Amino acid sequence: MNKLVKGSYRYNEYFDVINRSGFFDEEWYKNYYQDVRGSRYSGLEHYILYGADELRAPSLYFDTAFYMEENAYIKASGINPLVHYILYGQNEGKKPLRDEVVYGNRKGVMDLVRHTKDFNLSTSYLPLISIIMPTKNRKEFIKLAIQSVLNQTYPNWELIVVDDYSSDKTLDMIRRHYPDKRIKGFKNTKKTGVSNARNFGLEQAGGEYIAYLDSDNTWSKYYLEFMVRSFNYLKVDCGYAILKKYVGADKEVTYLVNPFNYELFKDGNYIDLNVFMHKKSLYVKYGGFDARLNREEDFDLLLKYCKHGNTKLFYFIGAYYNEGTHPRLSNTESSNFNYLKTKYKL
Image 1 (cartoon, helix red, strand yellow):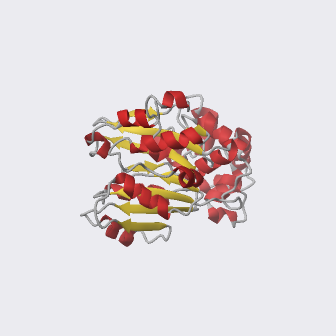
Image 2 (cartoon, one colour; image 1 turned 90 degrees about the horizontal axis):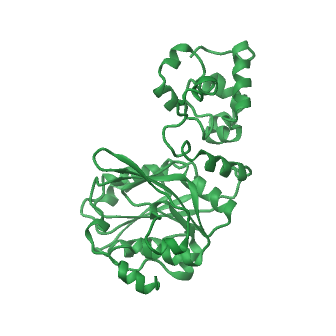
Image 3 (cartoon, one colour; image 1 turned 120 degrees about the vertical axis):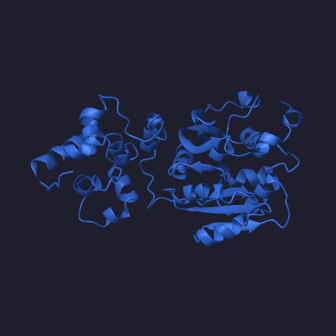
């Protein structure tokens, strides 16, 4: 793109177009790009003069790098990519974001951000979130999961990794490659099962909120921030986001998304634990996972917490899962649904 000069005709034109569009978020831009906060430019000035060339995003609603990848001819034209989208791309049906994490659920996200406009990652109270991650012999898969935690825009978390007696030195790899003090690793001296592993993690948790991430899933980088915003806005005890799944060799995309209704939920689980978060007080009051279960242990926990706590679906994509790439415990163990029906009188 051609170098712009502040005050020039084209600069002023870009400023007016972007400023009127609603696609630029001054607060978000300066919070996300901390180097801009200390500069002599406003966020919008920086984006027009430098940020677009550096492929920085102007807000949650436009991905500059993705838009340039999809529309490479724009670089040769010299036009600012966001200006191009506002003036032409919208009418041509071009996508402003790489996937539906904001794009397909844009109204829900925009409503959330509008209703929580006073929330600020720099100045607001940020409760500690304890993330429980059990693992066993997933040394390669777990790297992506951990990186998705490190990529979070929300900073106040602790990741509790419980290695259920792996033979592939998973925990050694984590300690070697991830020196972040927020990551805490524990290894069982014998195999105890996923429920016991998670329960051990819950015992170590110091957070006000509890989240779960399995070693073969990844989070959207806004997941924890949006969850905290949603809890603050909706005043709930439990909440869950949308799971995006890639199924089979052709990676067909499906979504796990249903508004919460306890009577319908009792007929079958439609909440994935990897996009579920709850107040720690529910664990303190009602306990953790039922270690007698070898399958549907997550459904058991969800039934228990959602029965006693106010629960809502949050309309944004929180996590991604590649189904069928490797075996899961739930694919090989027998069902415990009849036991749950008796336990909860379903």
